[in-house]
Each structure stands twice: as structure tokens, then as C-alpha cells.
Image 1: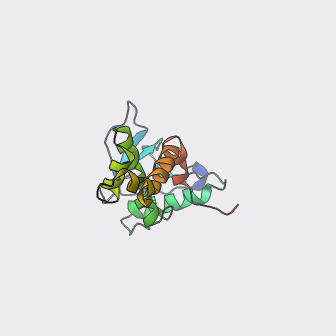
Image 2: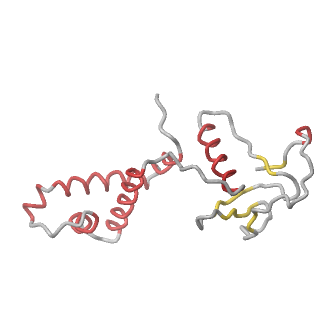
Image 3: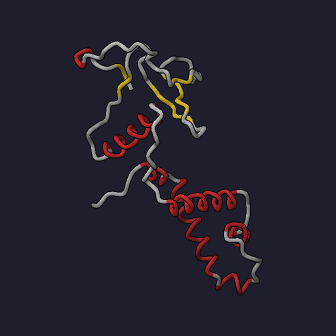
Amino acid sequence: MTEAPPELGASPVSEPVEPWRDDTPIGDDDAAFRFALRNGQRLQIIDCAIDGPAVAVIPLGVEGFDRIEAVYRFLSALHGRAIPPDTRLTRQQRARQRRMLRAFDGERAGATQQEIAEVLFNITHLGRDEWQAASARHRIKTLLRDARAMVAGGYRTLLRHRRPR
């Protein structure tokens, strides 16, 4: 965000320019601050003009659609309106992402795949032969494979909507 160009003719505002600003300092300069959402989360805003109206500049690439939607959600929160849902992931996809991270954390902590499956899928301990044939074993392997890919940089795909090729 940066100051609006003078040719846009921004009119003076009688109320504070940034009534939504949370003056939680970030770093050494005043160019970054946090915006507090109603749900307890905070957004970090960078390079915002302190003494003028804030504007959003959106590049016109294909990612522009996602950015426009994000700005719309931000404006809704800013002006106290109902915040539209984030449509990048379905409820099921969010639950799977959560399971992936839990499985990855368990693996990094030294748990076996069977121990992870017992916790994530709420199953009882299986014998060796039963575990080899169990569908939970294959589900855990898939979750861990996808979690490793996500941690290795695939998480960036969460920021974009799926688009037809």
C-alpha cells in the first residue's frame, strides 16, 4: 500500500485516516504495522502512507483475481462488514492440510507411521501383518508424501485458486 497519486483527487477526511490501525511496531521503521481482524488474527501491512489515504495496487497478471478477492475481504474487515469466506480451500481440503501437518510433525518428532495413524485416524494398535494390509497405512504414506512436498515449497499453492489450464 502506498499514498494515492495527487491526480486521483483524494478528498480530505474529517475522521482519522487510519482508524483501524493497530500501532504494534514491526521493525525499526513506521512503514509496517498490523491490522487487527475481529477474529483475533492480525494482518501485517507494509509500506503504508502514514499521512495520506491508503491505496491498494494490484498487478494485472492472472494472480490479480486472487489479490482483488483478498483486498475485498480486507475492505470488508476494515469497514466492519461481514467478511466473505476465503474460497481457496474447501473445508475438506483444510482438514486434510491440518492432518498433513500433524503427520509431518509426528514424523519429525520420531513417531512411527503406525503411531501417527493411531492418533490421526483414532485406530487401535494393529499387528505387523494387519498393519501391512491396512488402508490407514496407505493413507498415512500419502499424507506424509504430500506434507513433505508442502513443506518443501508446495505451500505456495495454497495462496492461489485453481485455474483451468
